[in-house]
Image 1 (tube, rainbow, N blue to C red):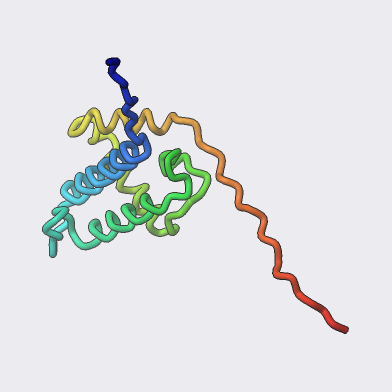
Image 2 (image 1 turned 45 degrees about the vertical axis):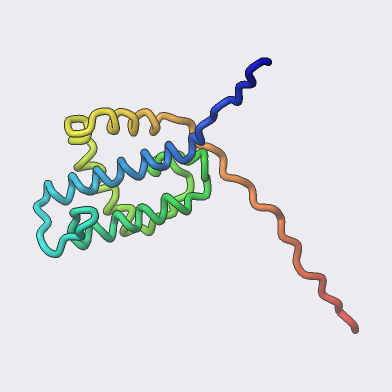
Length: 138
């Protein structure tokens, strides 16, 4: 009797998205703590209300990414799904927390830098939608 081996494959999309979400979470937390944001803290994340709102927005955007499995880093993406105000807020957080990531979370920071060097995928083409057949009886 021979043993049959079934290849184990891990979904790279879920691993990569989970890591990207963790990277954003750590960066927002570093920014919130570093800027001494005071006020009502969310118990689950330990963030102030503004940073908690930003984190929730980033979580929703990441879950709804049109690229799915092949998602690039947001800075390299051709589709800007963030609103202009939120994009600027995330950019400000990442600009401040990015260098500190290498000290506090070096592996996560380096992997984020490497992910930024990945090629950007092509946007999936939308199927052509035909207009409804309209009968013009004249």
